[in-house]
Image (cartoon, rainbow, N blue to C red; front, top):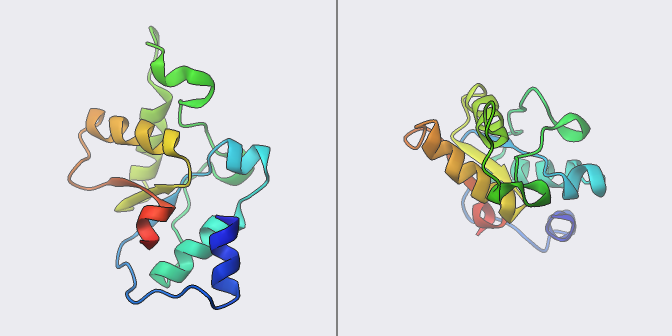
Length: 133
């Protein structure tokens, strides 16, 4: 995302068409809390949609994990709700059509959660690279 944001800033990357979708952005653990990269993904989404992403309640350094960190995606939880479903429900509350992230693990977790909460008709998980393609 830093590279893409820099190309945008330098005018070396432009978009022939803008995405007409309401987008919310999930701050992944490694990109966000581990590397303090919060603004660049939002700059990219603003450039491709001409609108700021709608923010979830928990964002940036306060964002929840998607549930896939530390290999939890392969773990069957016994008690309570899955983190990916909790986070997906938070995205649904924004009325976004796209739940964007820059982490392939997060995208996989959200694709599974969107099916589990039966939101396939209203919400799609997409990587930022997929959005700008």
